[in-house]
Structure formats: C-alpha cells, structure tokens
Image (cartoon, rainbow, N blue to C red; front, top):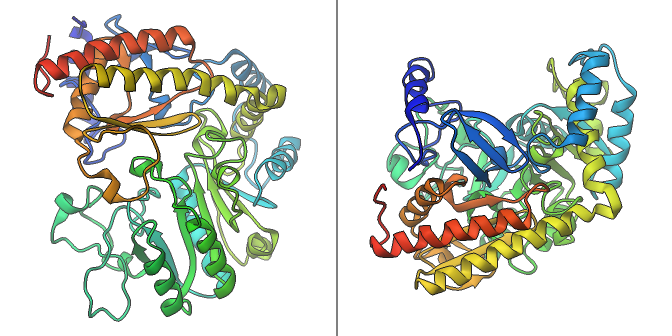
Length: 459
C-alpha cells in the first residue's frame, strides 16, 4: 500500500491557496483524494514526498521528451544560466542563439521560413489567429470539434452550432447543455467569442467543402491538429488533410496545423512530415524545449511578414528569452543526434508496452483499442480491436472513460503514474526494463478491473 501522510497534509495546505489546482479542467486529473507532491524526478522515475516511487508516462503532459534531468540537456541549460542568467532582453537585446534556433527549425519543419516565439501554446495559437486575419483581411477561423487549442475564450471548447436557421454557423458557446455536452465549457467566457470561429466535424469531407464554398469570403484560416491527440488520437482519413490544403489554396485561406503536441514528438518534422502535407503556418510548443516554457508560430515568409513593420503586434516580455532558446537548442541537439536515432529507440520501447497491453487485455477479456504515433498512444478501454487507427467519433462508440480512470488508479497503486484520459507519453529515457515493470503493473491492474467488474476498490 502506498504511503500518503505527507501528501495528505500538503494537500490541505495547498488547497487553501490554489482553487482548482495549477491547471483545471472538468476532466478528472487526480486518481486519489490527495494530490501527489513530488520530491525527486530522474529520467522516467518520480519519488513523492512519502517515498513512493513511480515510472511515469505523463511527461509533464507532453513536454518532457528527453525525460527528467537529461544530463546533456541539464548541462547546456545550466551552462547558459551560469553565463547569462535567464533572460537578456526580449527585442531590446539579442543572442546568436536566436539565429541558430531559427535556422535549425527552418531546416527541420517543412512549413517554417520565419518564426515568432511566444511562451505558451495558448499564446502561439492566438498569435497565429491574428496573423491569419491580418494576412487575408478576413475574420473567421475554422476549427474542428474535439481539437484543443488552449484556454482562450475563442478556442476553449464549444460545439457545432445546431441552429439550422443561423445565417452563419458560428461555434456554439451557449450555456444550454453546459459541461454535459461540452467538457471544456466554462463560465466567464466573453459572449462575443462565438463570432470568431466556425466549428465543424472532423473528417467530414462534405461539411468541410460546403463550409469553405459558402463562407470563404469571411474565413481567414483553419487551425487544427494533424493527428488529434486531444481527442483520443484520431487520424485524418486518407485525403482529408489534402482536401484542406486544396481548399485553402483555392480560396486564399491560411492553413495552420497545430503541432503543440505532435511537433518534435511524432517526428522531428512533426505531423506535417508524417502526413506529407505542408501547411502555411504551424503552432509549436511542449517538446520543442523539454519542459522549459517555449512556444512559437512559424510558417511561410509571405504570411509571417505581416509582423514586419509592426503591422501585426505580438508583444511580450519573454518571447525569445535566453533560457528558453538555450533549452530549444539543447533539445534539438539530443533529438537530431545520430540521424534522429532517438525516435527509433522510443518507439521500440513504446511498441513493447502497446503489444503487452493488448495481450494482457485479451488475457482478461477486457476490450481495448490503442491509437498510436511515435512517442504517444491512447488506451481506449471498452472498444475492442487492439492497435489500430480511428478516424471519427463513430469509431469511439463504447469507449468507457470510467474504466480508463479506474485503470489509472490501479496503475498508480502499482507504481506507474499515467496521464489522465488514457494518453501515454513515451520519452527518450524510458527503457525496456521500465516497459517490463509497466506491463507487470498492468497485469495486476487489469486483473483487478476484471475481478471488480471494472470498478475500483482501494487496496
């Protein structure tokens, strides 16, 4: 049984000061009544204040692609801090690293010719929206249901507007239905936010083409995840991203791919390299800097040039700050070493875990589908099928998040810390030994699920 006395005491103190925690969603994040307070992290391993040890697959929700305390990364970042501190100037003073980062990203990411750095993914998305509107002179951004794009009023949640009489099908941010129909529903949203985006279903060719044909005069851009890891890892159907590309070119609409999760994780060139379709812009973050806060929007020169001459403003104190740029370079050094060999290494461990989970699920007759890309996969309990690609919400029928949550609880009891919702991040520090221990824990967890009719019963 895991110890918890110190974490329980700290939880009581923490909750006095932090309503909702550091990051709050309606999706359950914690699997215990107390919060988990970490005393030490190293590679893939965490030790909490009570002395419990865990192999973790949360990766700080994606950024830690090299793992905790990667020695080469730490050495370079610490070296920068020792010589320079943390920030130099944000458009007042500059560093040779600024040029090196830009050159390397433009070589690695197909769409990138110019860049604008921000700090968080949410900021990068808003910067991209402003650039798309300025470039086209139009105002509306098309989004897909299930895609997450940060916490801004104009992108957090929303539903497809079901009002057939609406002159323009703007996103529905109305209060009726509330969180039951929109898990990202929030109070306090600006009532004007709904006028900024049109939300349509993912992988529906007919609706996509109809929307562009009818409303291209007001559509500035489209922003979407190439592989929708914020919605169970749904892939685009064959030809769907190509159709987006075709319509954007036809109607002078900016195609912007969100690579905040997929960038530098699924491939050094991101999802656009995996899918073989080049957008006009992309937003990147998370794995770009292995946990130091850095994000950016990058893309074609003719579009990014809207920022030149202060025509488009994207100001801030921290964009391009020294510590962040040093972290980007240190991360890229590790990811590109030996012709990007780390990606094969990561997938070798990941594949062992995925195959093992499927085998264990069959052993206990628990339906499980796994959606996957290099460095990330989703365990979708309640849907049979093993490792395979899914494309639409129809493919998710049967997905039981209650089983996922209970599996996460059992795994944590057995020393494996997972991200909420069934998503696993595998990074460069995970080993075959980690995989073996993880599968041993999974066997115990699935056995408990089966014995308790998929419910959770604390040890």
